[in-house]
Image (tube, rainbow, N blue to C red; front, side, top):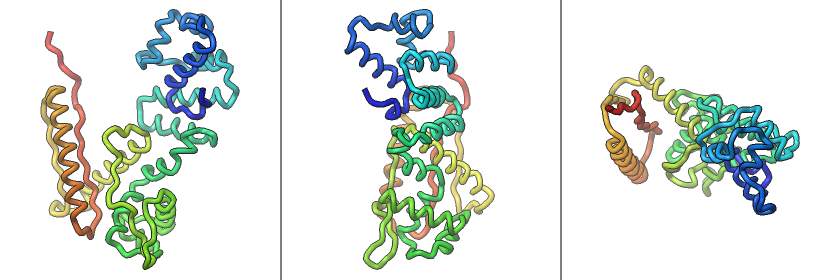
Length: 274
């Protein structure tokens, strides 16, 4: 079984731990876990693994004690529980970063730089600017190209991060350029890092209402009633439209960086007629 620090989902860790114990002892069962950890039925452990039931911190500590986790492992397990069960993005972000503070963790080893990229809105913007802006190292001028502008030191750190992630590199003439024209996170991205990026993008959209005149921006909003079937159909149309927009950008000769956002979310609970 992998070390606990390779996990970010405590339910997956519990499942793998159980499978390992079961393989070593065929008599090991959910009932034994229930008796040792202290919940009413063996079926409750099934519900935990399936995400149908959560565990409290006190129960998490009883699990850790039964699994004979060491102090740092127990602390990491607690953060996993808090991260997986958090409802608000800010809470998930906090516990994700707590997990990342363990240098032996998968979060730290595999995701630190990618997380940093989505943490600040201007990393993606600078990468896009380099597709048409001739940048050789004047961080002050690069910083002023952004709206709103950032500090030259922030622009420098951004370039350093983009180089580390191999998203930009110098060409033969010494100018920085993107390694690929476009970057997409894909439709299945659910990470805290991506949520950070989305929230920062929405904040930029809010500021744009006052910052730019109507002829320099395009913002619209619809409020409509639809079913799950209608929602799925609109989702597919939005995906196809986003592909078309990306195709236009690939063929275009850019001179400005734009933020393009689409939002679709419920404003009411689902109504079921009796």
